[in-house]
Structure formats: C-alpha cells, structure tokens
Length: 278
Image (tube, one colour):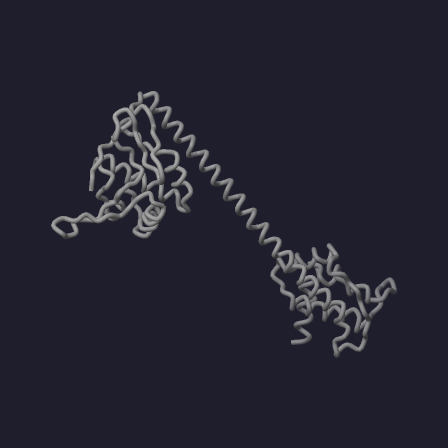
C-alpha cells in the first residue's frame, strides 16, 4: 500500500469536500456513518496514511458502541464507497486487516489540495489557513450541518405526508366498499327469514352523515359483522316488534343510521343482540 502525507489545515480541523458530506448525509443511518467516518479520518491523519489500522474492538472502546452498531455503520460506509476493507500481506501471509479511507486530503501539490471524488478531482486552492479562517470554516461547517439536518427533517415530513396521502387514497376506496356493504345490509335486512314484517328501507352509502357515524365506530374497533348484528337487532327492535312512541309515532323511524350507529346506542344494541341470540 502506498502511504500518503496528509496536510492539516489547522491542528484540529478535518477537511471534507462537499460531495463527501452530501454522500454521508444521504445514508439511512447517517449519524452513525458520519461518526465512524470521522473517526477513521482522524486515525488516517494521526497514522499519516489513508489505510488505517483500526479493528472493531478499538472502535468499540473509542465510541462505546455495541458490535452490531459498528458492523452496521461500517457496512454502510463500505457499500457507499466511502471506505474499503483491505488485507495486508507479508511473506505471502495475512499481516492484518485495514480500513482504506476514501476522499482523504493528500499532499499531492504544495499549492493545491486535491480531493479524490468518484469520477474526477476537485482542486481546493491555498492549502494553508489562518486561525480566523479556521474558525470561520468551523462555523460554516456547523451551519451546513444544521441546514442539512433541517432539509432531512423536511424531506422526511414530505415523504411521510406523501405516504399518508397514498395510503389515504387506498383507504378511501376500502372505506367506500365498507359503507356499501353495511348500508346494503341495512336496506335488505327485512329479507331475513326470521322476520315476518317486510318493510323496505332505502339509505344511501354516500351520505356523509352515515359515513361519519360508520367511521367513528370503526375507529373504536368495531367491525362490519358487528354492524350487521346491530342492524339485525335494530330491525327486530323497531320494525318487527313495532311500538308506538309517547307522541304516538311508529318506532319504524328509529331504524336509521343516526340512531343505531350512534355512540350512545351502538354498544347497547350490540350487547342486546348478543344477550338474546347467543
């Protein structure tokens, strides 16, 4: 392996080009990958080579990470091309495993620092910095990190909204089928052989009021079969065994979604059905 001589802009400054930063922040577990990559980079500067000796046990002690976390981050960096796991041999025997850190700043020219990228080389002129420039660079890096963090959060929100929207469209179609099934059963329950009274009803599945009631009960955990049980019991209660109200009106009027699907009565009628039919 050819060793390279590294240039320090300042004593504690690590130099990353824009493409490397963007690549890191595009990774799924970017926080882990950034941390591990920067540790490898630091070791590269310290060992003065882009192919560093750093086994998993050393990384574990440095970062206080578990083995699985280290393997996950290292594999992601390897897959993305930011690092390479290489083998060194001596006298045709394995001498050790090393981490080759890609995109490390090298001293290829005294007046220019070349940053290796995927396809080309990007020249960054003026290889020395004053203390003030170093501070400014640090502030810019922190600012950039905050902007990237905000952009990632916004991107996650947009993806979440898009996913909810797509799921919502599918859910609306499924809900419409549910409305139709429930309302159809309500309109045809009079055909049940146990009922002698055959009064037809005609409710609409596209009624917003009816849909709202059905949605509310579904959110409470009730299912379509339980709606049918309540409908069956409501027909028996208000139609098959018709009675007169205090105002002298027929109880038929109570066989309607606003009564039997209401929060006040749904559970009550379901329990009555179960108590009298099971």
